[in-house]
Length: 227
Image 1 (cartoon, rainbow, N blue to C red):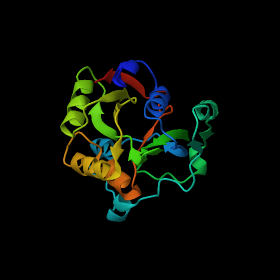
Image 2 (spheres, rainbow, N blue to C red; image 1 turned 60 degrees about the vertical axis):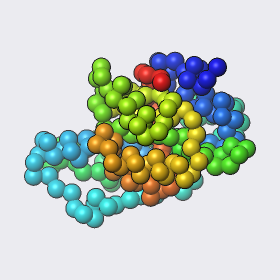
Image 3 (cartoon, rainbow, N blue to C red; image 1 turned 90 degrees about the vertical axis):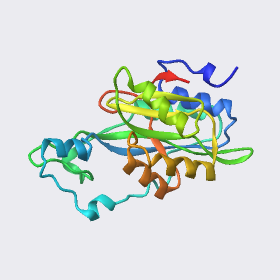
């Protein structure tokens, strides 16, 4: 049985991650709690207000992904702690924090809350690898999952899962990549217009990718297509 055979549409991102962990005999996996702002992409803000501007300094601003992961999973039992943490994520008063992203003038401050994301870099008995992860700039619709598969296949990923993250798709490769192959995969992704290129740039600076596995806009990333 291949790993794709074990994954069914309808499972959530954390369930998918647990399958990957078991199938690839991962020895170390990192999950991070972070502050999530439910704001529009800058392109959406620009559509509402053509005069919106983001300074060069703001566009280049990069906050390192984390100092210390919230969860180091070294045994399958560690997923129980992640599920407990996910159930206890807190809302944050947007008036008590500095909003990092662009907010159109006159718009109310976005919802801010704790969230969880998985880090692509994992350790197995054979060394360090990456789960291929992409934040796709493809709106959720009837033809979007096929478009997401096309992106992955043309980037050399032959088996993957497409997740509905709420407004757009996330894509997870089901086979692990060595570090050099992961960098090549991410550099090639920058050439495509169906990718959140800023997300790719930030991830290359960090040296690993990440994707949200918890709720945003009341939607938990959920598998809609497997190939």
